[in-house]
Image (tube, rainbow, N blue to C red; front, side, top):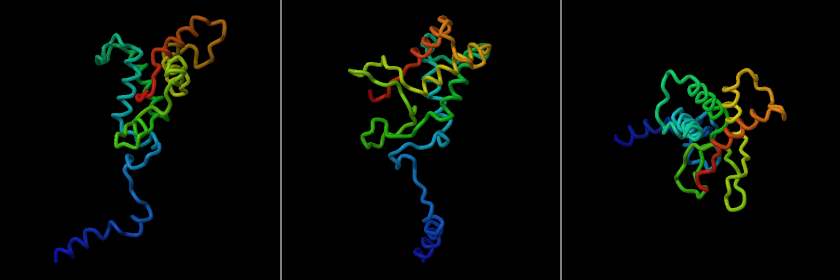
Length: 168
């Protein structure tokens, strides 16, 4: 009798539709998983990580409701991070069980793992989002070579959010 109950419970698991479309946990897949599957918490944590690299003096304190510019910049960072910038993968590529949501592209490492080579298109987009949030009057137009102050400001933002992969 117990076998019959177990058989009735297990039967839907082995239906033809279940076999045709197996369900796998993202950790079982050693390749990148679409950002659309990223939990909101992971997106918020990476947004916080980038934001507080930009503003280390805030000491990770909560942004107050009257700090509108901080709110705008945090939201701009989150928009970039949540669009196409996260992967769920083995953190250090050692086929371990340590999977996390990470940025899809980090700054490149030069000789000796030097962080001087800023090469992440994701972090470039984040820097753009922050910069143009500060300068909405520019309407996302390119900075002209003669606009040295603006170019310097963008470069400062980009350096502040520079990030190496956690395994380097």
